[in-house]
Image (tube, rainbow, N blue to C red):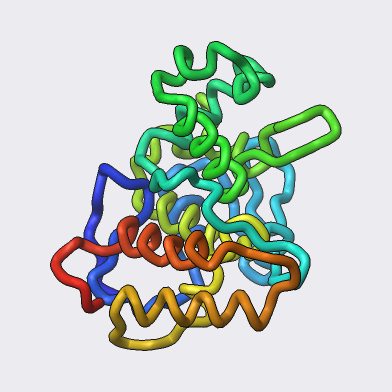
Amino acid sequence: MVCAYNRDYMVPQVTYLTVNHNVCACIFQIAEHQDCSNFERSSYKLLGKSKKIINMESLVKPLSRQKASFGRHETFALRYAWLTKGFQALLSNKDIFHSDNATIELGVGKNMVNSIRYWLRASQMIEDSDAGLVPTQLGQSLLSEKGWDPYLEDEATLWLIHWLLCSNAELATAWYWFFNCYHKAEFTSEDAAESLADFVRNNFSGKHSERTVKHEVAMILRMYCSPKGKRV
């Protein structure tokens, strides 16, 4: 893969979308560069400052016919500062994403507040609980003020977040499909959109707006590709 670093969006941008989905090396890199964790390679577990084991396999959300999500980002791509800003705001106020003051505290519009919440959930930095939205163990280890990389300065962190998105078939369904199931070396955005629509029709129960589903491809290409032409 040939990749370029883009500070506007949170994920590594790629020139060629041939992806090696084995990101263990980047997780090792975080452990080594941050000098604050040990990695047990044989069982894919990350041991952080808290000395609690994070089982990376448990973070994979496999494909389910009953669970799929499309368009919940409110058409806003994941931006560079959003995860840290939203995560640390949640630590300060557990009800921030339901607060009337969220737009003021986060400094964004209402739809962007919803988008930040979505991206935090899709990247598995926060999760739903009986008490509402709460930080995950990995989110705490990574994005808290004394975390491994709260300001996302290590490119390996971006690859880890990329893997977390692409492994989350429940909340980032189109990302899961694109990086795990769509293997064309060259395609147009229209080709990919039609393929995703077919995939959704054949693999999920319930109704999903075809227009919304197809728009997911445009969002993925916007996040990962330089806008140099229609063919990728």
